[in-house]
Length: 520
Image (cartoon, rainbow, N blue to C red; front, side, top):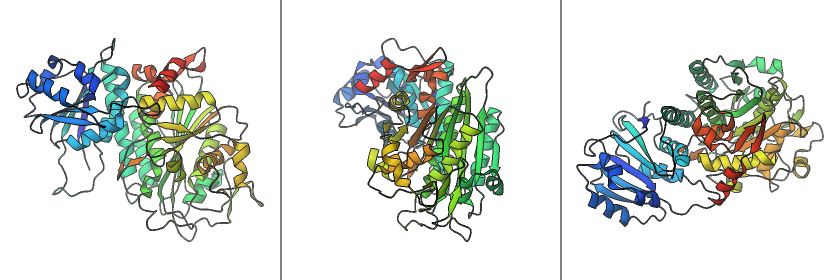
């Protein structure tokens, strides 16, 4: 199981497209602003200035367009012209599609022509075009190759990319592909023990030893949600925690990921058409793992805890039954009326642990939680629910700058939480009325185990549909979180993109950046 090796470089190197095919990608206004001398090192001696100018002037993106400069070995491609206020200015989704269409499968070079503010999102778009997981036999699989990515910055006053910027872009590509690989891997390989091993490997690379609570220890310690969901599986459920605790930190932040390595639905079993693809139900935890690695590598200055709630929602003699009542880590009791509403159970244990044991005051959970998310916000935008308006605005702005798009859901516990009313427990785990803001309700179930009077910041990101595009994972979420929390990063890239600013120990919305994103 391999895949192309991707490496970013800060400036253009000289190469012959006959030996190293090249794909030049940018917005039309950026491409037309280039002089031939800007791109000549990648095109000569096969393409001259006249051919370049004719090709660029012939581009009419609708939504994209391309022109071959030299056989299929040198191509220039234009990104969409239109970008509405809820889209990402980087057009990163189109970058991925263009590269997948034009990749030669041999050693090749991608040249990104963009503003500095779009470099990070564009880099993540490149990463998504080259997935890692494959079990195709050698006879029919493409060989591994090298992909060099070089950048031409065209923004007025854009500072050149530093060595540290290039390092962060390379780490970003690694992190996105890591998350996508986990999500693409089937459950016979990526079971809970395998995921624990992945977390341990990431921890080892960062000098962090994870906390692992697994199997019967979960029941003993009161994690009734995680244990109840995963107790029937061959591979035991687990709570895994990676903690980054730098000296001088004053804030405690937790990122909590849903890691259902496979979801049969339990005894409320899914159908033969809705069950395939449920290997992706660990997408939230995979994103948290990749984002945590990237944030720490970029120099996150505050205490950061990555919490993975791992289980396989399996069918067996010991599986949870509808009507069972579980006591979760929050101490609250839950009547199970749908075993296929399991993600909220494991996440509730995770956020309660973050608040009670780790004393976190900012808690974000990420999950492939509801099918209703796709109806509410679609295939590109995750759905966000939060108890704080400033962080809701920050989520939207970070989604646009990172390329991992986000759109808010209504937060109204007083209107929606009654859907979980139970005669015999504190709540049921599935709503009574499935037409009443079901994605909001699912998030509110998790918030209830913090308490609706939780004095800190709570955010919920439901990315059930953006986690994949077609049959491939996207690594959604890895780009979003380091940008959202970029005000605590030592990386110039993340600080410049962060929608929040940190002054006098308090976070304030960066109004200028937020306004810019809304108008883009």
